[in-house]
Image (tube, rainbow, N blue to C red; front, side, top):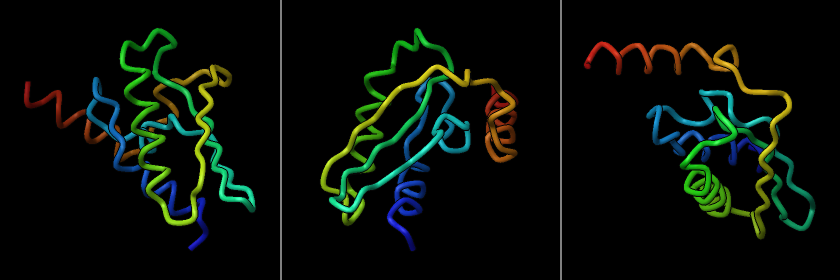
Length: 104
């Protein structure tokens, strides 16, 4: 398994605390690159630019990425283009959100 694939898998454990769904299923992660020196670059967005939990989410992304074997350094870039929309979510995220709403 490629190191990028391992990072994608690790990021499935990082939740958006407000939504309660992982950032991969939400479509917040746009790109992952790792160079030969083990420097990982994660390009991602948030559901809204003013997200009050942005620092926490980025910290969790860095920690999850750094825990992957072979990663020596982590850089997380928050980008706003393309803008996130619910259309970026996969079916699993939609089902989790529907299930959470039905519990309320």
